[in-house]
Length: 349
Image 1 (cartoon, helix red, strand yellow):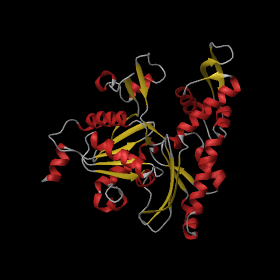
Image 2 (cartoon, helix red, strand yellow):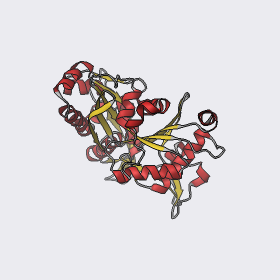
Image 3 (cartoon, rainbow, N blue to C red):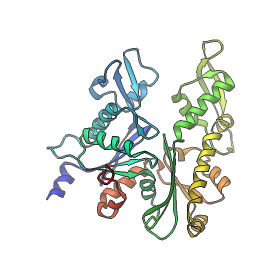
Image 4 (cartoon, helix red, strand yellow):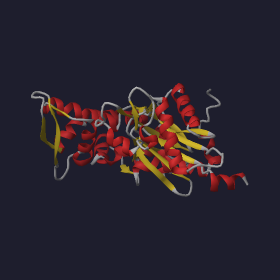
């Protein structure tokens, strides 16, 4: 009876609490929300502008464009909560937007988190989710969720390798028999790529641009490997020498040069993960290769780039941005099977 009530009145939630975006899925319905992890607040206080209206996409549009009385902030950095109150307000708004108001039942929630966060940082996620209206809360490693959501045969006695390149972190893991046998998590991902583009253009063109402009350049002309037809795009910013706005024509080769350092760090992360595996699992990887998930998997030519540097097959998961949310939903649907891979906070705190 309680299960029927939960299904029809207070649905469980699967949350991918990302640095750049938050996704929430409902069992049987898939992903229902995908919005930037941004909140707009009045300066000098903690009141959310517009009573919750400036959360997510609208608040993201305010980044770098707010007047003196409003501050648009991102409550997470490198997958870790850096502003607890704003993260709580953001989660509460998103959860109500997806599930609506309930008759008093609090939803059970699975939240995907990076593997590199500390116990204290995990405690912050538990507290924020509970204060935002969640009932029972479980934490799930993003790499495990991504592997499950990408459809890898993680329960088989076979090496399944996932590389989830998000906004704040890159998660690399090898799974076998439903357990993670080797994993490495680094705080180099999409945001770090944007920052390197900002620095590159400032150094090469004396042009100061914002991270949103850098992200647009990365999406429109960025690539990890050479393209058959190289692309160009105009970027607008501030000339640091003259102090006036101007435009510059940027090529895909230049963006590729700017991305060299973070891409090399991701390659090194994958190598370190492989080195931690048993020889039999490494032999499996020569055939099964790596599956890419996360928004970073959409960078042009990243599969070819990794294949050239690692020498093993590389493919991109279907709908890579939502792989983590899909995996968390599968864990919700088969809670008894995956419960051992979830952290409920009891053993550690």
